Length: 528
Image (cartoon, rainbow, N blue to C red; front, side):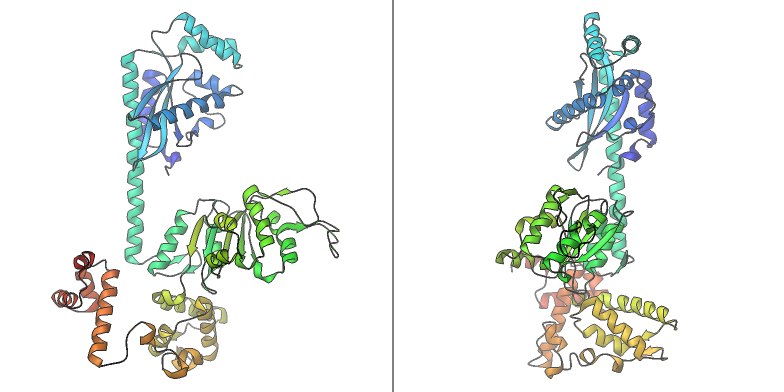
């Protein structure tokens, strides 16, 4: 999207606008791909350079007349090979020129120069223009000087005007392209350096979390519904908070409801409210969350646990923006952005008829999938440091540290309870360690301490990672070596120099091993 506010402040476009006004007496303005004026011409007390356009925009339907011209021109340019076009306006014999703004092959807007008449215009034609202006509500005392002073351009003048307007469009395109390149480069550098491991209250530097941060940045100015999926304890509510507090609705309320915590009747009253006397105990009117969160965001956690009848009511709010409080006879309006979440398999539920497909497509405009903690092992040390610092600060004690052996045990564990389980374990360790500054592995919960020791006490970590622990030691080591190189090549995008440094081997040695295990990218692509 083009940042239209910055266009008017560009030095080159400002100078060109001055030239267009001085030489050709026209007003220059922008419109987006939806034909909406994006320059300051709609602001109150805007100082118009062209008196004809000022009179037009002061008419009762002046904006509508201009809108018709913009829409007509936009349609013409979108279906035309050329970059610019001359057009006839709503008022007879009054003309303008327009140039399209194309970025990466996509039509993003138009720049206009308006109005003028041709030097060949006759008195009868001017009379037609005057008649139309009077019909549209203009004052005759204004019309006469306006039509006397409107610029009369020759064919050559129109060509020069069109060429200069094309330069304005080109400048907008160049500026937008440079800004986009700069933003992409900043994003790349953030990813490469691994500096960005926080977004709002979320923490993680893993690739999967970085991808989520980038997605959240892209949708920060959006009003679309968001559907968050992930296991319990992965931080779905944190995502909902980040979406709200980085959105245009940040100054209004974010309300959360756990749909699985209520039966159908209670959830109905909680979401939509009720009127006095609607049921036994309804002693007064009560606002529901949809009404209370008007202008803000409503987070529907565990939406997969709602009944089909409740799903119908939610669908109505999303489709029509109206709801009916319990016991009410007239609907009420709600302007609420929906963020929904579940830990259940929604597609399987839809297949079984337990979740409505039409509601799913309404809430799943933007999908965010939160990885489990075992899918982002590299984030565990960062999370541990954060929770340690948080708990020690709350307890008013010096910061503690996790011993190397204790950290190894925690990295091996699979964390079925995800980040929530990790936070609870850190809180437990801070308490049990007493005055000791160093937290040792024997303080860990039994399930974590004994995990990976084999037998009934835990799953072997090597087996969990897909490594065969049977057979000879040599074959097991080769299997592990091949696995590490294979994963490393993917991670480094087959950059062998980078991977050889990571693995601590020479580049020549790595190339030999890649050949040995048949991991060459070109051969894999060729299907060998």
